[in-house]
Length: 405
Image (cartoon, rainbow, N blue to C red):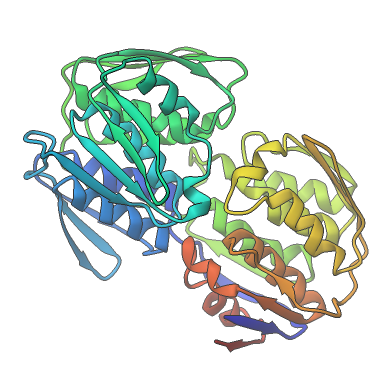
């Protein structure tokens, strides 16, 4: 889908979309509880649909009523596993890494399907754990990844600068083993906020899990998941794309955000203020998903220097490289090092279409800039991955859009 955006300004109030990160966690925790949980305020992005598909693989019964999901985990195969499980993760890295953690515990064969880009992401942490026991295995095949699970370990030691999705997967694994255990993280620890979101979700569903010290996590033995009626809070990651209109001449109020949220991406408000005032230097180690929108807003204002950017290579696209490529179409000079990116400023209207690179956050970042200059985005359908109503929402704010399939 191509989307053409006329030069236009956003005004008005809008509610933040529900947090995809918390919805993933709540839905999985609900599937591990013996009974029915009700999760409200869910946005059915492609990633959340992937997680729902995977809890069905675990035997959970799922019903959808508007923006509410009813999850009954009472018939989970965790208590009586079958021989082979098939997980279709689509393009969701969170889904695949979370369920791989669960699969490592189960004494069965688990087959993981998803896009080629997803399957080619690094999974070395799990691979190394499984290969430490010759009765288990992690195998990449042409169209899937196959895990033979049944690990006996209860204590792990891993690098703290890996994706927090692996840490969440290990916490889920320990929680369903029921024997308790620990995860020692070798400093530095990045994306701590996402680990804390996992802790919050598991605590709310009855699992006693937390920090033993600054770098060690524990899961208490004997805990069982309990059913919950719970609401998903607003998403700071996607709200940033709405609030960003205020940095390019708009006047938008974003409602529905929890000021006490554990979401690390809430720092976008502080970072936006810095980008308005100066050519700021910003560290995105704990908020890598904000990279594209911060780069875009730097380009639209006074420029910026961003550090801890290396992990952007293994997202839905190589986000550092493709943002530099697309910003060049706006006349923006950039300079990229191994772990930093410098963004210039001075927007000009692009003379060719910009490309979304099949990455939802690239598409939304380009939409912001095009509202200031006018132009066309190719591959705009990628927003369905995390924020399917994005274009409809910004139209409500006054951004002039034409869609072409």
